[in-house]
Every structure is written in C-alpha cells, then in structure tokens.
Image 1: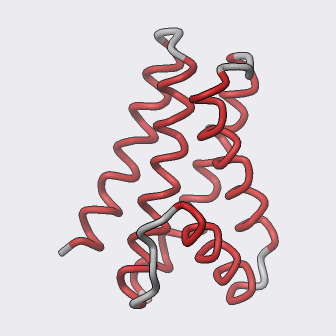
Image 2: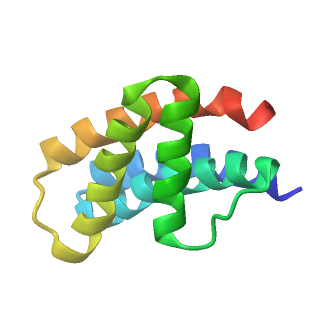
Length: 118
C-alpha cells in the first residue's frame, strides 16, 4: 500500500537528513528533511483521495490539514520544510538553521502521523 510506504519512508528520510547534517552535507540534509514532510503529506493525501502529485498540491494538503486540525503549527512547520527544499538549490542556510529546521520537521511528522490512520 502506497500510504504505508510513504509513511515509513518519511521517517527514514528524517533519520537520513540528520546523518547527512552530521556529515556536513547541508544540501542533502535539507532535501531529505523536505522529503520527509512531503512523503508524510502524501501518505495522508493518498489515504483521503486528495491530489498530491505536484509541489503546489502538497501546500494545499498542508493548508487543508491546518484547517481540519485547527493547529496553525501544521502549516508553519510545512513552510519551514519548504524552505529546506529551497535550500537544496540555494545552499544558503548554515548548519545550525538546518538542525533547527529538522527539529521542526520532526514536530510536524509527530503531528501528522496520527492522520495517516484516519
């Protein structure tokens, strides 16, 4: 089932992001942090039959989940993850900022994970 694979791969990407950061590869840490969030959003969207194939659709998924849960942190943390995606291309954020962003990614995954079962 795609939902379970997205979910499992999401947590694996976060662990890989932390490893990449520890190794000094902030670009790969950034992209894997983004990927962790993208896959968790895809897991939820897949289960609910929502479109999720394009980047902008993931933003819509995050926005819908913010409205559904009433938790502003869902979209705020999504925006942090999206900034990690941008950092993959621009390579401007220092390692400390990446580390903080990965902590936010983990918080978001914790918020979203229960929604993969609804």
